Image (cartoon, rainbow, N blue to C red; front, side, top):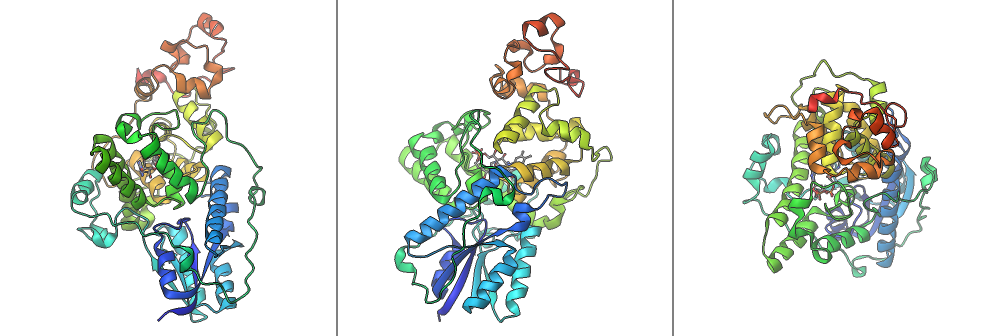
Length: 479
Ligand SMILES: Cc1cc2nc3c(=O)[nH]c(=O)nc-3n(C[C@H](O)[C@H](O)[C@H](O)COP(=O)(O)OP(=O)(O)OC[C@H]3O[C@@H](n4cnc5c(N)ncnc54)[C@H](O)[C@@H]3O)c2cc1C
């Protein structure tokens, strides 16, 4: 039997399409009240190592996403109730006020998100109400997997082997229409949208060196999917371009929309399959599927190992004694002042845009952990703050992997930064974009300006140690 009134709490699922909590709420309640709470701990708090929990790029992206969701709900005759505070308090107050029966939400699995949903559940129990949890964050449903979550293979290749051919990806759920919403019979203040300055940030525009302008929201996410698959036809050569560093379309850029749930992975999969039906499957379309599988894999590792993915010893429980909480080294890394151009260019891109390519992330992470011996948690914590596409499982899972504290038996993920730089930025174009002080350095020395002679420095209008820093590690280790 339908309940008179139910709430639906939007979290990292800021979309109407393929939204299980919203779909369940609409099936269960006569009046459905959608809510979003800007959690003050997330928007104003600090990370473990004292970085702003959500730096300006992601804060802006989320504001845009919530705004877009509100506009979409309004176009269906509904409303998105917006509050700033603690979700467990704000939603509890609304539930009490409107005398709802249940609160629907898509379940989160990482420690901070779980603490909030548990606190809300406890508050609701005190007034005889319940949280009803739904799913749908991954490509796969855990109940469709051929193993229990706790037996998920620890190596990606094994995981892939066990799922890819036999586990079906379910169809995405359709977005609701205006006919699915009944008008509310109770007055409820909609609440004003906060602004960036309410979270301590000045308004800003995208850096013009940026490869890509991310705009939050389901509308933009779906448009990006359309562009990438159909207009730009990137599935023709994605496999060869996805390790790139520069440009709008070398990779999909779906990550920010996926992280806030503006795009559903099942929706991406459906488009990918449609494309394959029209043009035939190819290595690139399969490769995008594999990338989405990595995302599921890290989510499952988060479920399986819970708190361990955030611990210094990781899943393995092994702490390398050389890893130090060295704030001085960390600062140089963060600011892109290591004297290693490939690292500095990537860190500058992150600092000025909130984004970095996958290739860049692997290199800067390896450099921090393996060359500088800095505690990897500090790097992960900085990424948590800065990344426009931060996702707890993907971020901490990838850092686990690079630090070698995951449970994959393969050892030594050391990256030779010079080899990587020459391979992925052979002409130094990427480096020169983010480090204009190196623009006149000849190509053969662009990745090792520390080897420029005094005469060459003069000719390149640069002084090592003054206008560009001396390398903080002995770069001969990579030669
Ligand atoms: C140290 C480190 C930290 C990272 N932190 C995050 C993070 O916080 N959030 C995040 O979404 N990704 C993270 N990644 C994974 C990856 O770098 C980004 O997903 C990717 O660069 C985003 O760009 P894209 O959307 O164009 O990716 P594409 O290359 O086009 O891939 C398509 C999608 O597949 C998924 N994907 C691809 N590679 C990975 C991967 N290695 N792990 C998990 N999912 C993957 C992403 O959802 C991505 O959007 C991290 C990687 C490293 C090495």
